[in-house]
Image 1: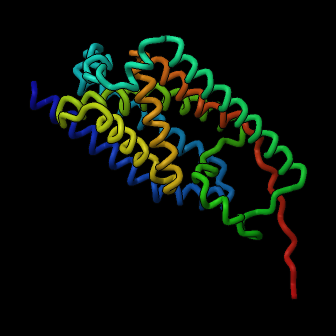
Image 2 (image 1 turned 135 degrees about the horizontal axis):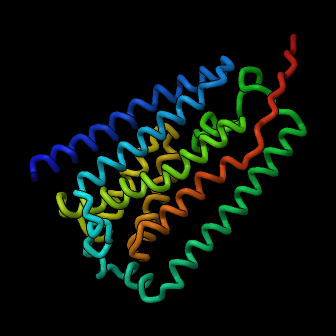
Length: 260
């Protein structure tokens, strides 16, 4: 039985690494397909993402032998961490953290929506005509993934909810348990390594995306441990991704060519 579980763990690791590495050229292909006005380009990526999320989560649960007790952060031996102790003393504090994140997320989403609406009123030149500002290169590169049509938004909602459920099972539940049980990691090192792995899983977004998702991974780890449940990070993770379905589609206009 141990050999079987070890094999499942290896298969899961290999599968996740393969999908993460393979998505880098596929993301470039998605951009080319969108530039060529391929109407089904995003949908195909979304369906592949759905398959990846649920297959990886199923493998993680099999690797954990469907032992739900192993999804309890109490087995991670982090009770002695000062941060976790301070968060766990008052149940209202983790909920205050969640409320603060939700408030910031709502404000940020409204800001994105207003900025997009303002840009749409002006008209946005295509990237082929006008190069993007340099500061945009510092932002995570996710624009090609964002849904535009109603069909894409519905599929995106499914992907967002699946990511919230499946990625928390894999990167918080299974990963923390595996790093602690097999690599003997604990304390800050455990959270740090798990957060870095989560960040690297988003390498297609560029260095800024890796850093930001690593911070998000650390936050989800702390939230999981402080609340003693995957439910809160699952809900928050799903909402973070779902908000992109609310963005109005960009209105692209051709910029006039200038001749000297």
